[in-house]
Amino acid sequence: MIGIVLVSHGGLAAGMLDAMQMIVGEQEAVAHLALHETDDVDTLVDRVGEAVDQVAGEEGTLILVDLFGASPFNASSRLAMSRGRQIEVLTGLNLPMLVELVIQRDGLTLKEAAALARQSGLGGIRTLSETLGGKSPASS
Image (cartoon, rainbow, N blue to C red; front, side, top):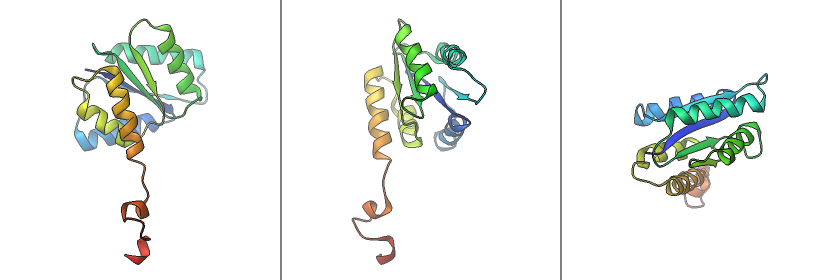
């Protein structure tokens, strides 16, 4: 099973975990951590490493972060590049990607899990007018 670590600014990761569990129930091998204003990136690298160690699965660990290029991404990327085991980092953490990932991760490779999470995250971004087939909400 793929391990999952959520890393974000502030309480976003904890909120995502809470929302995901509300939808699909408690899940094993999922950890979360937050970057706060007083934290430094070196300490965050260590904290992400500890979280990865807690949830690491045979197929590897997928780290979901909020923003590309920001401290959670940078710390997670440094860890992924320094470790000998399988770690992938995916940005744009959102609830559709997390829910789909925990539902389908059994039996997936790390590469497959990352692709599924990315596709689900992108697919979860929609507008109401798109959903209504181009009609404006007021004209329905």
